[in-house]
Image (cartoon, rainbow, N blue to C red; front, side, top):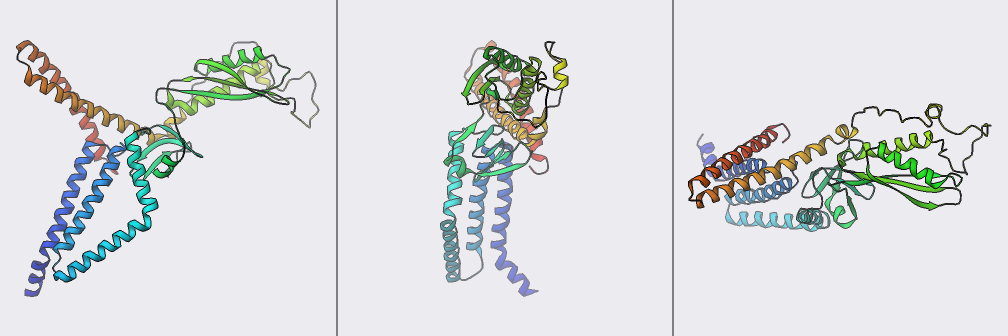
Length: 358
């Protein structure tokens, strides 16, 4: 038992250092989680940087506290330094590059959680932002991880949160009057709930004319549904007007009556009549981009709590400087309201942090 007690005494500094380091890391992570939601982007980067720094500090402290001779400790520290240096040198082109790219993205702030983003062949909504990577939730509800270095070395298209242009193209024959086609396409854009629609002629081909119909969509979260709705409205409007959506190069091996247009029977019956009532359909985006929606909501809550905290501090300072009793009463009422709003937001963030996986 004496040898066990002696060993415990000798190893106690190292064990205590490791225990304290782990406890400090847990407390710091908890504080950072309270400050920034998990999916808030900036919080994820900060947590990763702080965690890396704390891990390095704990490792260094444990090595120093080990009950070994000074010469052996120096050799062990030198070996650790060589391993770390070699690892950084071998992975510098990717690890350091992605880390610097992640810091650059946080600095310029051109990409936020919930944004629609297209980079090369990848398209989706941002569902998470880390120090080394950015995660996109695609149209198939899958998650695609993109290195941050790719986002700063390639052109990135970000759909503006304030609204975007939704468009579609169609090729029609030269035998159909242009003004007739434009009127149908404008009706389709209005039926698809697009604001300020306009028509462009994109190409005069050898066999057909390419038209583009576009309009403004204010609610970008419904981008996929809006694109589908516009194309469906184009089909309905052109068919109701008796316009065949085929170019003169269209070839069909069946023998057709020259007087019979290539239009679905149901659409022919509705020609020159009022458009059919829109059928309510569930928004596909709610199912596809669930994680991106959560990330966007978390980012919005983080921004809201930051504004609430700043407002409370502003009112507290104003209250300290105010000497008029009536003005102080007004400031106290505003301060109580701002404090209540801050506490509600903080409770919501704390609830998200306590959920599994947070």
